[in-house]
Amino acid sequence: MAVFYILLLFMIIAAIIAVETDNLLSSVICVGAIGFGGSLIFLFLRAPDIAITQIVVEVLGLIILIRATISRDRTFITGDREFFGMVVSIVIIFVIFLAGMKVFETLPTFGTPIFATVGDSASQAYISEGMQKTGATNLVTSVILDFRAYDTLGEATVLFTSIIGATVILRRKAKKLPEEPDQ
Amino acid sequence: MLYALCFLLFTIGLYCAVTKKNMVKIVIGIMVMEYAVNLFLIMLGYRMGGVAPIIGRSDLESGLGGFVNKSVDPLPQALVLTAIVISLGSLALMISICVRTYEKYGTFDITQIRRLKG
Image 1 (cartoon, one colour):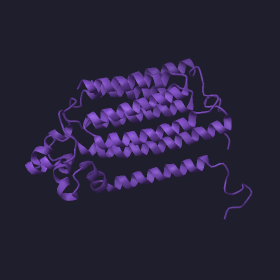
Image 2: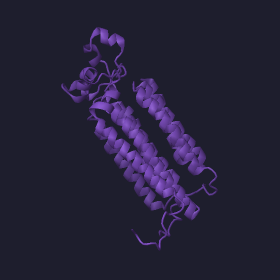
Image 3: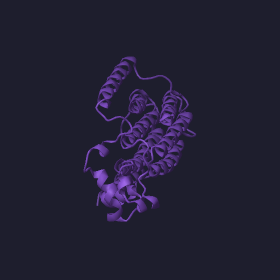
Image 4: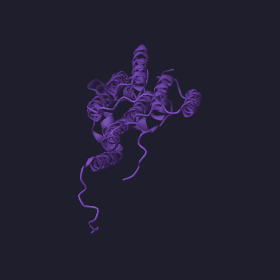
């Protein structure tokens, strides 16, 4: 139990440093600290698949972020936006935080999940029947590749769409001159 | 209490995305929000003293009845796995927009980027 508090406080401190520091490269490195702390906490929450994926995605994301920030000469930007708008946004964020605290009172306490108390829930069916129906001993794999395979198909679609978008945005020259007519 | 700390992480990301002027800082704020939401969903399925949702040899020999009562929830884990991979795609798209904007205007400051023309 204490390890969750330690890791979450580590992530929050890293997030505060990442938000408040002026140097963009150290900010990116603090994002890496948040991600790897999150990976450790996933491991302690008994989710090894998520922990492995988080490490891989974190390394790739750090490479992308460092590619964007390194050798850019004007990365130091000081000063915030105008004062009035900032005060209003902080007040609104604080109100959202208080409303979230009220919502958390309705949730069951940490360590007693909802699916265990509700009989005949989807998760219980996956746990008890996933082995016979799909033949996979890892139940997470049986959910993403068999029970909810359309989700994975949609995930692949979104991923390829975003990669196509990034390729089009980063392309230097258009394939067709502006004065050429459309086909 | 752990939920509250997780939500504090989310609000730090929201503050960063709303009040900062640097484009890369805004992207970082969105990433912090994604971490917080993924962590919260996994925490909702955690069972105190539970085991990972992987059936071992000893569970097969003793029958699956005991495993149902001690495994953590596999459904949020599967959906968060999807969300993590999608967050990488959206990060690549946002960073490519930032890089092109820097090439055109020479700065990441969003208050300097006023001439919005193709």
